[in-house]
Length: 185
Image (cartoon, rainbow, N blue to C red; front, side, top):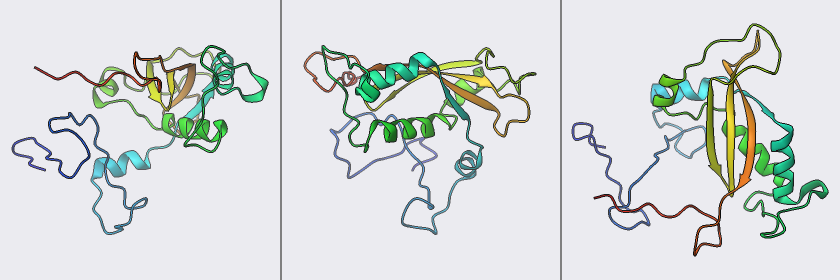
């Protein structure tokens, strides 16, 4: 890490030279093998932040079940049911998806533009979202909304999963992954 130059130099990766690195994850000693590693304050703060409650719209739950052919739901006949692999089951994949969305995964820019408005006055479920985002997760495209928490909630917001869709097919890619990034000029 060269803080003066504003660069992080990566070596030993299985990538083509010049490939952009879009995401760096912090080292978490609790989950890794070097327990004496130093964790930056901002990482520690995000790890200690309370998890948000997760709710699904009935449509999103139904669509999730259909995509995996779960509970007798009919999968998309043209493409067949999705496999949850490497997850053990659709239920395990759902738990990991919910665990991911229970964190505030918005970027600092998104958090600045759409700050938590505080708790709502009543516990009704019909609150308007203060942020709507999407997440590409496994073979899924998930649309979610962040809602103000009801009174006396432990977390500052709640998540409502609005829609779950299969990743679109990409020409020449049967895995349905988005196309690789184009080279920057």
